[in-house]
Length: 563
Image (cartoon, rainbow, N blue to C red; front, top):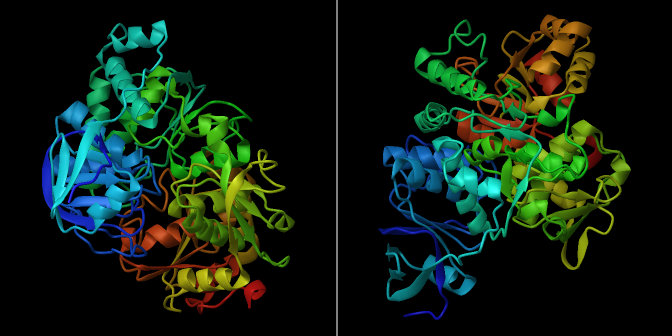
């Protein structure tokens, strides 16, 4: 059987293998074990599937920008899929495959198919890919290169591309231009600042990339902050982190600092004193930071994958595509949320998580939630959880976010989150053993207000000896909490504050080795935690977390406003 639909080779190459068609998008970071190539996302329908050597299909990826690092790691260790096939535009995994080919000579074909061809291929069991076609169980799909968009470049762009500013800058420009063309950009744009997500140690590939670029003379040219890293940079040896992990993780962080990045080491750069402004064009990576910047601050950035973040910081240029453009910031889905007026802060990660499932790659407008008067921390939780289950780079909240008025397209689809949906979602994320071993706060990094709120509820009471509590926060918040006594108050109750790393990059023994059940206020960590830690991870209210810390137990239950 042949099809008249032509597919596109985003990155060409030859491959063959069994077809694994995923029923929903996957975040490679936190969703795939780079040491085995298996899906570890415990909430994904194909949990446990082995992707190595397979033709892996999904509509598009979702979740973390760090997925590009996992794809590169898989490619360099021989554990990668044979090819990646998408039906929608996709940047994160594609960038990992592009870096594997551009810098390390490891080809990983990436294809994009139209719906009929994609659905036909998904029904097959084995496929063979060449530069010109896909053949599978009698199916034949012709392939052509992506349309050769004429990318307008300035004289400065051409000079960088030609190597006039060094080989590292030239390589960065080649990667930016390749990504821009596959995104359909017609030109590049200046950015005023960048945020690096690639400083998380997903494996040796991240370090190899950073040190290779540094050795070639890479230096950032715009103010550049750094994401949370994988160790507490100053204290990891004292904390007992094995040198085999802590050493490379620290080297990775140091490489980016030597390239001119600020050692902010936070996954919540919008909490820093110099947060971006409305309509400011920035080059950020890290999914929750991107969504918060676009949605809440009204700044403009694409959801840049790891490695592209450094390229943008080195050149000050980014493809003019995605949410840089007015048209791509419009809402294609309106979600009506039945939010009780009595809802607590735990409503926001729940709404974000469920809205992301509904939205998938579409920018949504949430209605009916302004009456909840969300704080900055509520919106932080909303955006982080949304970015876990969605591929979209932003959302709008009617009556709250700066671009919500008139954001919905006239033909936007409609959906609803009823109280029944909210209750069912809470039960799914809150389910697990009543006995709790660890309380996890700060994914994304906790704000000073969140630290104070925890200290206030604890009110000096001491933790149960069987339970640990860790709050991860950025250096700026740690300093403020130290200055106002909040850190001392938390320590008196047995809650430890740790800087530089975050829950999605924490490792044992900083993550206590004997923990079996974790409770958290983070929708993001409730999703990624089981796969990353091997533990049961439950979403709870702040009161649930405090109860668990004081007594060692917190029964699975609905918040009072959902009961």
